[in-house]
Length: 100
Image (cartoon, rainbow, N blue to C red; front, side):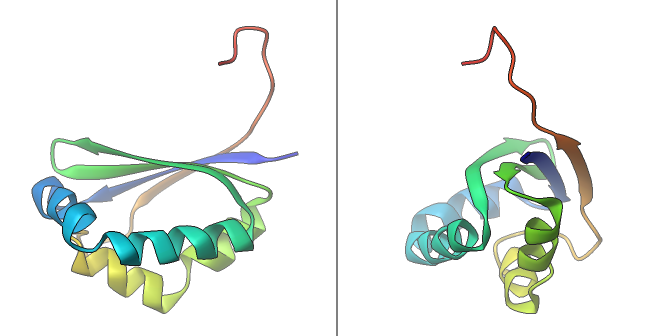
């Protein structure tokens, strides 16, 4: 059973968008580490004053271990994330007939 996880990080979406272009190699390395750690799917979204991460993980424990890495937390701050704790939502992933 996998889990869906959203992480809403307050911060500067414009700085984050620029970091996606300027630091693409770092994002790829983190993505590769996430897949090795148990990530199944990953996307970003930008909103008014926040970045939204939408992930699917094999387990919440794998996500927690990955996300608590001090190097990752430092990276988040360096690409526009605010220092305050993010809003994290975890739920069970379920299949549905209308899924695409």
